[in-house]
Amino acid sequence: MLTFSFFKNYLFSKRSGALIRIISWICLLGITVGVASLIVVMSVMNGFNESIRKRLLLTKPHLVVTGDIAELKKYRSELINKNVESVDLVENQDVIVRTVDGVFGGAVAKGMETQQLKSLFKRLTENRMGEEGSFMLMEGAADLNEGEVVLGVGLAKTLNVYEGDQIVVIPPEALLLPPGVIPFYARARVKAILQTEVPDVDSQSLYYNINDGLPALHRSRSRAQELEVRINNLEELKYYKNFLLQQGASVDTWEDRDRAMLFALKMEKFIIGTFIGLSTVITAFSILTVLVLLITQKRKDIGVLISMGLSKTKTRWLFVRIGVILSFLGLGSCLTLGL
Image (cartoon, rainbow, N blue to C red; front, top):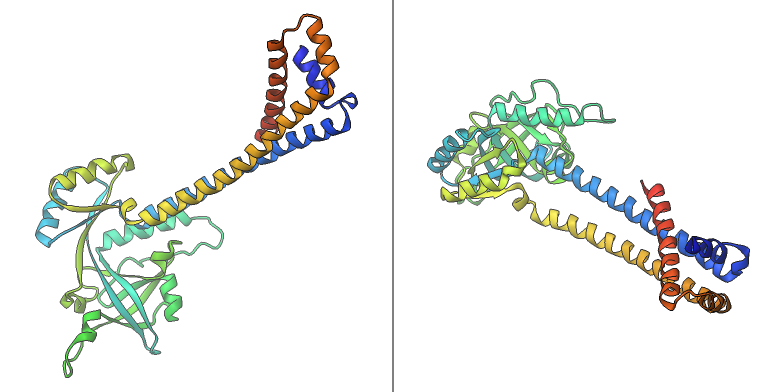
């Protein structure tokens, strides 16, 4: 009761003096705004990071296994027995894309089976269902025949091509052939344009059917074959990675491949949280100023309390509790404001 009486009558009442009253309000508002800002910013950053993580997991495999075709087939049969969500053999290679207007651009050509393409497009469509301005794929976009491809929306904008336009896909080694040798290339028609909202994917992806989509690329020596694995439970990611490493496989997780971006996001969150937290701590130090001014101004009242039997220890704890109450008032206000 004595603590609350002091808090009420010596901090915010007219008897406390204009200076102490003003500084007390500044402390209260400073802590409120500082901690509320910290809560809001951290909530926004967490939501932003989760949104990026979700988009990456929609478009990229959880595990990527590299090796020769015989090893990949062996790992594939072992993973199928592990009851994973999907295990697909894909082709990857860097290519040069040329349009009929003579515009050139670089791309990453990815050969996938029809069922894998359907699963990818289904995940993207379901994720964007009902979103304002959502980009919907045409029905049957995953059923790619010979000479048909799907381009990322960023790559399509760079090349200035649309659905139905013709393009030429050229492996990079075809440009290094000796004079007189005709370079090999693949002609293709853009069947659909894909938007994933992942800049790396949208700006450079070219999808085709791995079986007979672009037969000319099978001659390319830069073509790399990989296993893309999606698991049912991401908490088991480390288990599957260790299992494949024990089999002698070369394996990367989605976190390994996007380590730089994930580290940048964590660092951004840490730095922003640290600076906002420091501003709140600096504001909290002003509470000490209030207590010092209060003790200096009310020396006579404190002397009366001591003469009435209040010990120095209890007097010290009285002002500590006043500071704690002032802090918790600010925290309570900030929680109400921030949440």
